[in-house]
Image (tube, rainbow, N blue to C red):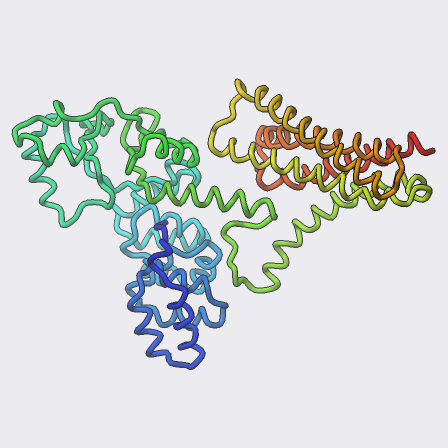
Length: 452
């Protein structure tokens, strides 16, 4: 899906459009929409409540609807597409690139998407079906089958004549792909070299054979890492036999990077990065209720730990004042480690060879910070209550909880990833449970040991 730059769209423009809608000046709104890029129109739709959104969609030119819909989040795409039949979906998406069309069809019911495919011509249908056959989070799901290929025996003059026969070439074409008669990828021929080469030169003599073609089953995030490392604009995709299947371009990789960042951020709150900002109340409440229920269970577990030491709290009441400090410090320290490890996993920085070093480093950091803030908190506790014992207890509990938080923050993401659970989604809840429970247990357990 293409990316929207902030420079393409103005907040003042959004405000002006909304004011025109409020006044009922639909002709003015339509004229203003025509001046916007398709990405800007999509941004406007995502930035307005449902009632206004439906009016805006009716004012968009039919020819622009397909371009607009590819910029929308999945929730909003589903909302619009659910109102259309297969024939209308086909008309709306006609002319889109195969990878963008495949993304849209994946959101539709199987029956509707099948009818849309049947309405296409044979060549376009084969292109889209080849992409749909792969998981959307793999290289196959990202690739576009629209690419230009030549034979190694061709001359540069012949290649140039072949290119001139096209009305246009695929977007972001920086290389011509060189294949044999069996469509096996042999190399790439950069356009910049074609333009300055001798017309009589042979492709075989100019092509680059030392290329890193992308396996079709490679995960999308790994594809993004390769693009980052090599500064690619595009890269060929091959199957296990080395046959060329298509290519991936930088615009699709930018989407992967953006989606990965949004996923990590939103998952920590139990939200979906594709959630519609202006989704209906019931739909939004239903989605959030599940995550709130999970968090309630973890909070109940931490409360059970406190319940075990109820007699201690009854006798030393000011322990209740100090307890939240222990849990809060452990939670913050653990979150720092957790965030670092999740980010490192996403970037591919962590491997079995360096996990031990990372753990030792985090334990060292936790130990130093634990000692520092344990001394500070011990002083505060003494200042408040003039009780040397409680100062020792809170200092020890804080040191214990910060070290446990570092261990949990480092190991939980690795463990969750190993059992195929998204660390960004489940890591924060699991970490909170550990730091709260251990913090309360250490603090109240030590208090019970020395006061009762």
